[in-house]
Length: 342
Image (cartoon, rainbow, N blue to C red; front, side, top):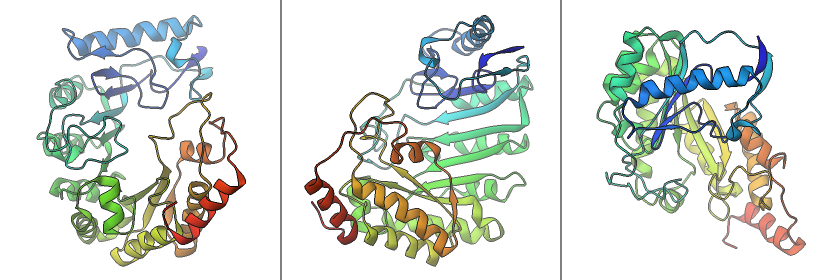
């Protein structure tokens, strides 16, 4: 049947901040079912069926209407299979990043989100045979490796031949990740290093763990030498912090020395909220750094993972960016070249 819908509604589950969702895109999709509700999981699945039937009649949930992923085409009937799961750990973290969307006040284990346990949900989906060999499972933060049940969940999913990706700060080395990276499926870990120096790391992460992270990256690469391209190291660009040539060069120096093969770039997702109406300034130094990062990745022979949303930000396809003065732009240009504070 032809109607407007998306792959998330037809097969995704997000264990989000305080309830079940269908997607973790910048458009948050339909209202979620709170974990506090009795039989929340079952209610979420019933809600999914109701949304699908409404969409077949042309009724689009309000929070989906502007989503670019929404597509009108011939959709297959929902068969109950789950093709994507996102497991968040919003309960605790071992960093205190200044760009954290929950303001890092769960650092050192302080509880932030509502209680939920991902393990029984994963087990339920397995028991009901709702996962497939094509199911993709992403773990993100807080810090996924701090979840007590993380190793067991990974092992269960590996037995199901699911494809896994972990988004981690890399502070904690986790043996099950090496096991995951060696598996037949193209599993990956993405570690946000975001810089090339200890001083910048402390400013961004607000913990002094640069040496631990670089050591973790090297250890994963050493243990999975033939699959080292599965270890992706990310660089999120922040105005006045790491948006300069010197820091990017130091980042690539480390990556070359460590044997990293795959890199990724993004832009600050605190100051760069997804909005089509707000007047958002994208600094010249951020734009230059974003482009320079790509140039260096290609020049040095790294595989560069695409970041469509970051591309849209930098190319001014998402934001209504206001113009900044020539003097401010000049200072920003100098900052990119020299790396000095403005």
